[in-house]
Length: 211
Image: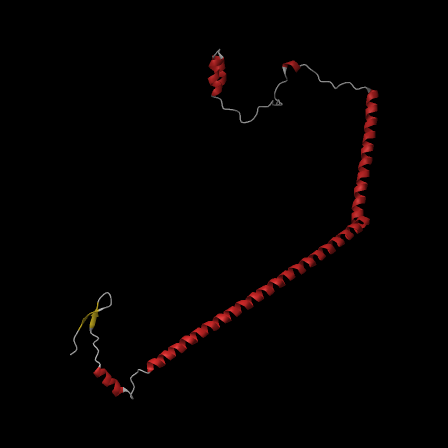
């Protein structure tokens, strides 16, 4: 209504332009609609009476005959195609095609089984080789562990023997009941003063006098 008022009130297109700009753009493309039942006929067709086009009787007979021929040929083609499809289905189910397909499937199954057996044999051989290699590596590891353990035990034994020899050597200077008197005399003859101080260089800096 705003657009119509704007068009009616103004004589210039420039005055009507802002009114068009204010209108919302259409969401769908405009198309020519159909008249409803309540719409009156157009003025140009108000008194027109629609009559069917004239038909030539001879031409109608020819057209009807050709149409019957067309229907017969189409029915024959449909029957032929249907028969061919049914025959193929029958051959696929119980005929020679079924036997050929069964033979082909059997050959394919045998070929796949042979390939499967060959693949299983290859994988089994590869698995056995890997298992043998792992067993050899485990043996080498156990052998190396045994050698290392024996070397460690030998080293411990030699260290214990050295400790025993050192203790035996030190035991010669131990104080026993047999050399008690002798050690007492040696201690009295050679007194030692352990009360002394040392500097940072480890030299004796101060020592107390023996009493």
